[in-house]
Length: 252
Image 1: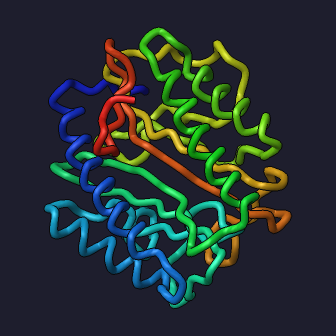
Image 2: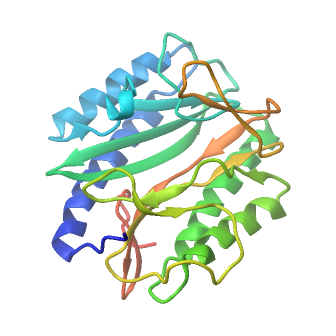
């Protein structure tokens, strides 16, 4: 069942989302060679708590950390560790917070020092695909219009969208209906309505779309070892258009 949110509920999600956005910017500033993903996890938890939020991921279905930190060929759900970031790496930072019982969820992919031009292109296309999807999050459109916009932009650049993981509704639960794939034909699925709040999160592989989950039962990597990038925003559908709830800028 898709749960429509009142303006007051959207405001609570936005407060959680604002914390996520601010902490992600703090983390981005700390990403550099020599830093460990465990260092970033500590910064993330401290940043959320000092702003009055609670970490959304820590303990969720047994996940052991505040931050999902996914490096290079890791797609999502990387567990922070003593692994040291190296010049030329990319790292996906996926973060969630809870405020007054409501969730915010967002992700960015960050370069560690200087990265190769082809890797810069992967990261840029992935972020662009997120905004192509958000542009379709208008009342009256179909859910798959969002999915199709992401897929066509990614595949036009020669990359693959990950099909094993999807975006999702969000509110008083981290994952609600509907699921939001990053692929599909347009004009399919539920009609978007004002009050729907969705976390849209393209995951894009430089190579093929195959996925493998490591022995920790969390970390998902590309099957072919290619690099992967990930961006995410929590977005409200309104009569006036999509509103990004995990950004300091607001409206898309």
